[in-house]
Image (cartoon, rainbow, N blue to C red; front, side, top):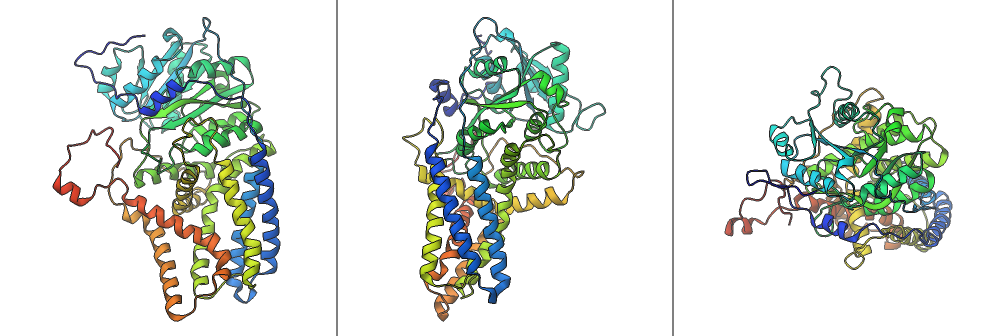
Length: 556
């Protein structure tokens, strides 16, 4: 359908480079993949972990029990976490493509919830929805605006879109205050406009469609299998070169989701997903108990016997991804609170063992941040001569070396994104390094999230805030104080020991160097993210830059 935009109309944002590339790439993907490298690397990691664990228990320095015992507990947690991850990664399943045939397409309701996003950004999303390989008359597109923006309503008037203004948050009759409430209001409106509608897509306001065959591929899967509650696809994002904040989450969308296919543990990610309407009705519509609705809605469907599916095509491309530290903290902190709160206080009855392993693995990932409270002080103390183990240097090398090497090989093996077209541009070592910087550097945020989620109890729901759709670049030094303190503290301990001759042999530092020293290096790199995007002072003074586009401020 051709949309004519008048000269006075608000212009939509141009399509992002990555969305254009996704549409050009198409929907082809291999339906089989080799799993033996992942399994062999996993078995080797388990064997070296067992050898290390036996040695570590026998070599604890009980003269310093206050250091050795916490270090052993942290090690036990790390090894348990490794076991769960290896088990979860053991099998991957790629679904056969089942595109819906042309000529008999069912009506699909497409909900785009908004809350103050820039109008050009929303228009880009809407136009990408319309420009799909799916008849426009078989789309019921509804923009549900929690921002109640007259400019948005006027801009949408020329498009085949229904503008909906839901009740205000906490208004009587509204089911849910945040995004879930918006979605539920939109669902009720769609039911009123199109009784008996069979499928519902949810799409974030800033997520334009990637593959033009998105609906054809996803709805085709739902038509072929009545037991499917929802189908999720890859979410991409327009990011700066190198994706410094790991917003593309390649290891998740192009790896872990395939393992979830094998265990029926896929969950919706809020966008690039299509639901069966009867499944939403079965779970009581979009749940409002947690901060966001996506993860919990999937769990509610799975524990009632429905199945979820992941199809590896690009269904959504974020026009903006958080690339300033404050916004990244906000987004990932919300995910952490939401996940931990659901797994600790939510109702998981009905989930099978393999499903629980995948969902609890997410919690273990966040709670792994607590080990930094042990590993970082341990390396500082080791530098002044107090180590958690009492053994010779060669045995450190003999037992620490294999598990360290096996861990690094394992991470490289699983960090091979499925069907990623960026093979020539993507350095696997650098990509893994950047991902680990974020995993480790976010430890203080994950610690705070765990305390809030667990300490708040089942009935205390933290306040949800929408993630900003613009970058605010400045030096967020106060947000990196914990990481900077750890780095400077360890450096001070090392300098003190070197000056006064207390530095132990390098081999004796083997255990704490790997577990704690890795944190030190990753923290140091993460601190630099506190000022990422800030222009150098001399450049700002000598050549004043033009005022950037408020929607898409360029990142350096």
